[in-house]
Length: 316
Image (cartoon, rainbow, N blue to C red; front, side, top):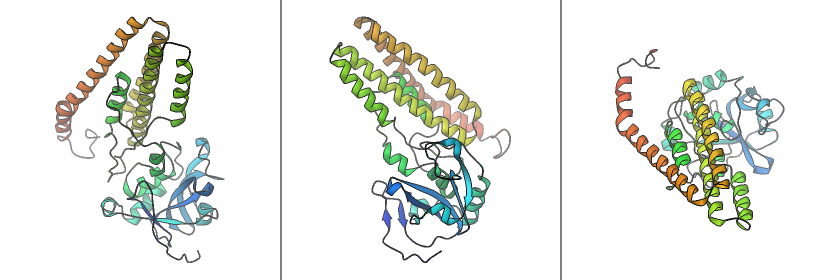
């Protein structure tokens, strides 16, 4: 590879703790290259000029067609595709979790052939961060979906936050390839559609009814994405039973949401208000149950776990 003249660090404008520099990589480095005039970046693990391990398609990145993507090994030229190489430099806080180069490479190689690509929940940056730091996160996705917690979420919001909280909420710390979490927000395009449809309906129908419909749609959308995030985490950790539970819960929440919307659209406002009050009370109960779980039940479970030897069948 041609010598690259080091330049000033390229610091992420939003996540200032991430620092990228243009320099020659060494084995185990997390590298990236900008694609489509900088619209997104593609990430991988550098081993040598003849071996870069990354999550992509054999012909192209195929970021919108998950069926074509696998963790593959290629040469550096295939990875760069004429783009400019950048190498990640680690902060003091990240350095504490950074694996040794041989461990990074060994883990990356063990993943070759893996699929289940998802541009939002399981992309090339997630893969590179898991290999190097044990942190399942993607900064470029988080920039698009900045998490905005809401204090007035009802039943669906409470359920979504509870499921998401199974894997530590929005914490981004790592240190183990089996523990991590990401921060997402509902699809901005879908939110825009809901907002526009609400404005149209407000011009012809009862304002109060439409405001209730809008609130119900937004709550369900947030809960759905919280469940999606938790589902990805369950799969990453190998918690098959938990993943199955989350899928069943999503199906049931969808049924409840459809019933709720039908009632709001067709019912009388006094009845609707009573039912919405019921949903709010359910949300409060979920929040209370979550607090009890965190303060009372979880410590008991952890104490029980401590009785078993780490890596034993019982412990797992």
